[in-house]
Length: 498
Image (tube, rainbow, N blue to C red; front, side, top):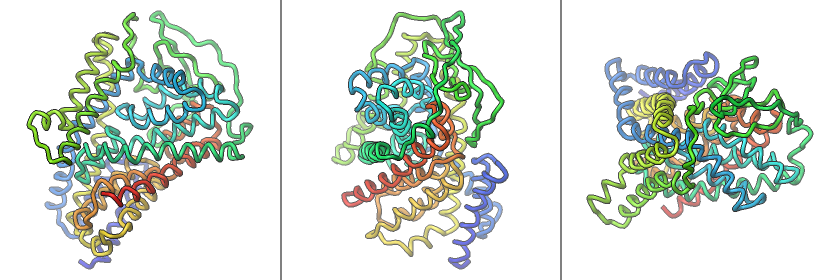
């Protein structure tokens, strides 16, 4: 088959995947697998080889990242159940003050808290961010909303153990320790510079309080049940496509949570999957270092393994403990132990059950991305693209960024666009002579471009931080797009040295 035919078929398949997701509202994982099967059949692999390749690709990526994603999500679910995030945000405000807290919160969310499922992290931290906003002056809401949007989205694709980051590392065969180290080198300056740029324009007329923020309306007192659980109500429920379903009402309970301020129509409690388990109150309140210590230990172990490998040092014990699946398991066990001593075994078990529910959809989506990547490799498209790029140019990094950006604009999912873009170029990574971690970072950066109304994160930020849709287009869409370009810039700088 001619090169142009393979390229044309692959392009048509990608468009077909986007149409299935958007037009026919087919589940993204199903759409990716259908696209992979279609690619195999249309490029002449035959029925038997096509199904074998799809299944092999799914299994291969699960072997690499399946347990890593599961351990990370479970660790985040337990931290959420302990109320670790609210304690952390309050501590940041006390330490860094009003001017520094957007940066401190952004860096903390983007790096330290990435084991927590995004929607859970957003819903837990947004009421606290909104409580801080008035202390930052006239543009407090704009600054906090922008910092949260940038850090939440960057963390998913640039920081271990963010679910898309782990998936990208698996698809491109990047050791997780390297992904952690180089991801940190990109995400930290990206968050700082992006927030700084957005704050500059916010103070110079970008943000209009009267049109970009909802008017503040007094809320009715929150109800408290017999267990001391504050119950919130809200009138917006969000489906997976990010579109608000009006007219539905849900309730959620948060231990000791303050009622969110803002308009009645925008009151949002915890999402259904984030409902905390009622339990007996305890006087045992561990410090932040105790809560996050096991997670930090696991990240240190992973990073140490990468440093030892770079230094050419081999040690069986150190090698075993720094293996990502072992390191994250140690962190999970430590977090579970702290939680059992703090909130009790029943609530930990409930948190783990919720975590397994969340990890299921992530694992299936990641596996589907692996099927597509395997099919692209088998079809020969990798060899074709390899003819047009050289290792001495930045073209491959720009191409993977553009592919991920276009996919994200069309589909509206950061994870899907990053995984699909990486899967398309994974087969040519060895031929290019470029460190695959750069391709992973470029794909992650591109997938951040133009987070818009098809994103669940967009609507959650809009409703929970008291923004209008116009305001959210500025703080979220523009803010994260700035971060996307900045992250690409730092990735290109990094490519000079590795």
